[in-house]
Length: 157
Image 1 (cartoon, rainbow, N blue to C red):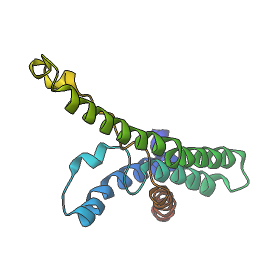
Image 2 (image 1 turned 180 degrees about the vertical axis):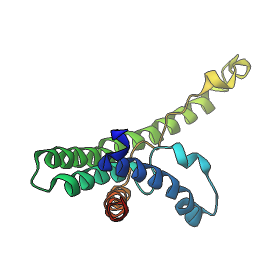
Image 3 (image 1 turned 30 degrees about the vertical axis):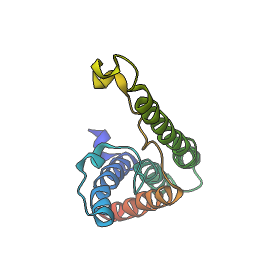
């Protein structure tokens, strides 16, 4: 039951849930379409990864102070995670877009080959997941979400 009193953990989990949930209305506001799959997807505004790690760092800072070694670990973990979300994972998503386009073009070409139409659609094309990472603005607002949510939770818990 001590786990239920771990404020940094609870703040991080709350930040993940909040960031994932708020993606639906934000996307609706922009596209006028409701997409419930965003609740469990990667990518999008705000970054739940950034929200989680900044909530963790903020929670640790509130409990142990900014001068504690455990805060240093949490802060570096947050920086690495946010850098990865906006850098490596974003680029992997961009590459997936290009590869999916190439596969689509190749499939159009190959449909003229004998026997291609008789194959199941599943064998013809397999799309790569394109929403792997975040734009820097999504990471920024995810981080801000985590910090602010943790500060608000700190007032009540």
